[in-house]
Length: 84
Image (cartoon, rainbow, N blue to C red):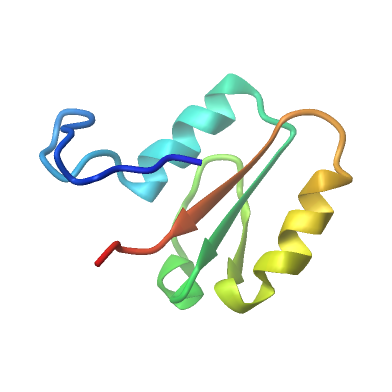
């Protein structure tokens, strides 16, 4: 998990890395499975994402975590949600 308080600058842009940049990095590292969880999964429709990860609504979080737990190798879940 990555937890940011908002005081840290990460990456080249003030807002940090985008979901697409993180997915590209994780794909390049060779993770065995990559998924994206979001409150707005539709915003990833027709978007080219490295590794072609599955995108799920956050209401399936528990199910996805259990699935990743049983997947061999390194798995990554990108949880796309803006902090308050």
